[in-house]
Amino acid sequence: MSKKKLLPLLTGVALTVMAGGAWADWSFNGKYQSSNVATDQGVTATATAYYIANSSGNAFVAKTDKVSATNTKLTFNGTSGLGVSSNGESGSPNHAMDNTARTDMVLFSFSGLVELDYVSLGWTSNSSGSNTSSSRDADFSVLRFTGLDLPTNKDKTPYTIVGKTWATLMTEGWELVSDVDGKDAKKYAVNGQDNTKVEDKVSSWWIVSAFNTGFGGNSGLSGGNDFFKLASLSGTVHERPTTEVPEPTSLALLGLAALGLAATRRRIQRKA
Image (cartoon, rainbow, N blue to C red):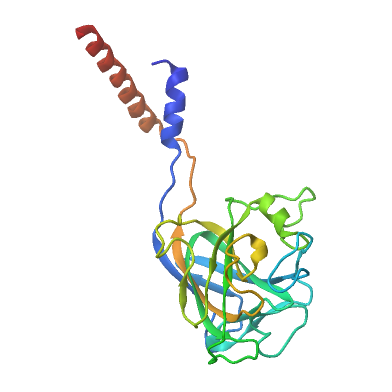
């Protein structure tokens, strides 16, 4: 086997993904919770609040609607979890994450590579703020960035989703992972769990948003009346894939194995 044919083989062998497997829970529902940061298994999740205006009606993002953070902040609700006060709104149930007038969302930036499997809601409500009514609703969407690293801006400023439409964000590497039919305050599978047809996906940047049909998902869910507070996230921590070149000894062994295979083939051909 020539060196030219052997090198691609060795390079292919060297390209590996080191599997993680550590289970982690990032909780935002402590009794005196007042921080947007949670850490488990050495990986930190940092939460940031945003919203998209629903100019085309309840729970529908128009092509021209852009992500904003104007006068928007996280709300900390003790054991109930995180909410979003978007564009200065206040009071119940608007201090929760909702899709009335605006679609509230929280971007979670992880310091490691995470397979987000479950989202736990600590509180749900109907449009009147009742968390016991049978009409309460809490549908939500889960999105992720598909790359290992965020895009680099030409002017070297930090990457941001602010000022961009969903169509633009998709071209930059964002995608919808799932839409979840929520109602009760409980844990929901969001990423292949309990559904063998859905591939488990990983990312260091995840968005949990009040449900919106504009993301291109399940339009069968009802929109515009979803209210919930996010208690925690759960998932598996993975190691980032590597493309490290093997040690010289490993290269030599691989080379010998490849040459040995070629010699065996020649002997078989001669006997035939």
